[in-house]
Length: 161
Image 1 (tube, rainbow, N blue to C red):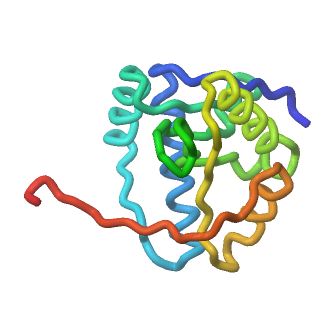
Image 2: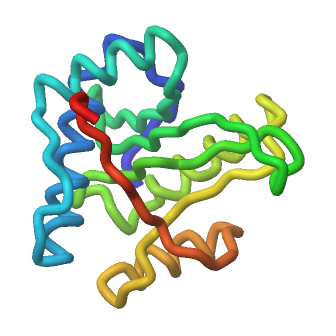
């Protein structure tokens, strides 16, 4: 495995995280055969920078040989079913050349450690219940996650609504 370091992202990492988020959403859309996201790199980088600066979004970033090769984006929340604080891994991405060599596991371990430090009662992730994502599901299960049911749904709001 490449010498990989995981650290908490700072606003200056926004451009690298945005590029990986765009790659992630393009990969998901390709697997689904439909464009389900519409991220623009510059707009996403600006948003990421602001959210990281305001600490409304957390990210762990994987660095190898000075290059960002993966990240996990995390949102903190509160819920009665979680008995208080929880976090959701909103995005999880490892650059294809670095997959299957432990980088994803390092990111998940770092996310679990962050959960313990921040006293989150649970760490959640959503992966579509589709055959195209069976490898993702198996990956999360190998790292201690369990299926809890449900489906991710969305309702979009525009500024005019």
